[in-house]
Image (tube, rainbow, N blue to C red):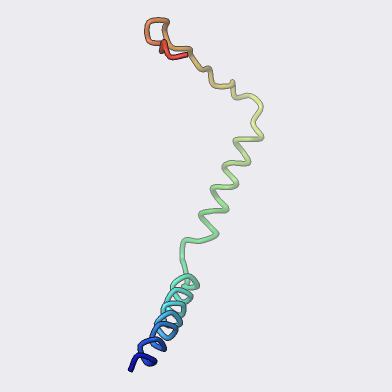
Length: 68
């Protein structure tokens, strides 16, 4: 009986692998189209040269930390 319980472990692992692989290879409708559109927007933003760089303000002196 103990041998059957030990055999159950790899059988359950194989079943888990089958479930996981079918879940990861399922058909997704919103896949590449949305990602490619986002990538195109990213490329357009990176190619723009007229956008001014973002300015970073330093915190006021009374807010700065004394830990040094």
